[in-house]
Amino acid sequence: MRRAIDDYDMIKDGDIIAVGISGGKDSLALLYALSQYRHFANKDFSLKAITIDMGFGMDYSSIEKFCEEIDVSYIVKKTEISQVLFDIRKESNPCSLCAKMRRGALCELAKEIGCNKVALGHHQEDVIETFFLSLFYEGRLNTFAPVTYLSRTDMFVIRPLIYVPEGDIKGASSRLEFPVVKNLCPMDGVSKRQDMKDFINEKNKGDHHFKTRMMHAIKSGLGPWKTEAEKGQKE
Image 1 (cartoon, helix red, strand yellow):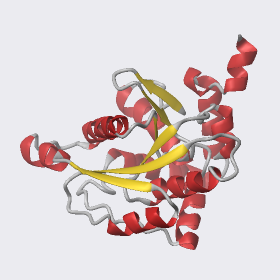
Image 2 (tube, one colour):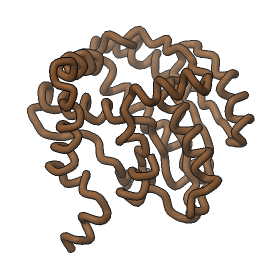
Image 3 (cartoon, rainbow, N blue to C red):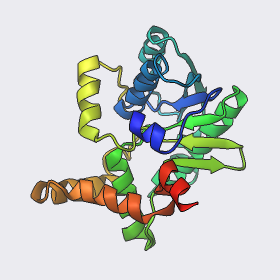
């Protein structure tokens, strides 16, 4: 995580960072890691944890207690996103629209509470999965960037865990007993993203360097993935 933060200059002095908490292991690992990093980082920044309640009836009280223990304020904003997706629009493939609505609500709330950056818990496999989703279903070479500026909300989105394998996060979650909240979304585990996850894991079984090479291809081939040092050399 520290290497990714340095490579892409994700955190600066004075930043107030809202960590998006879904309730899963990835966002909780990010929150915990950043809460520890602030104690010895050579940058003065603060953290707030926020959850967009989709309306599935999930209980976040254990996360509230966890945030108290690591000295991070926590806010839950209730929404009707699940009702819009499943009851009103009756979306058969709601994940893309859901992600946009959730991210929009997340950035708006972050802005309301005085944050200038939102941190999301996307890890290494998320990067590769998104690349293949774009390739197979959109016909283009693309994935999310390590740092994204959203002009509408004047907000930066950062992803400090992009170099971290999912297996490391699973190990940390078990060892540190993160209060993971079960996802009650009916699409959990049956989406196109899950198909990509299965595809990548199957490829990696026969070639243990598959994920490493894919990350190298993404870093060297996609413009937004140039590190701060590489951008400086180019200039």
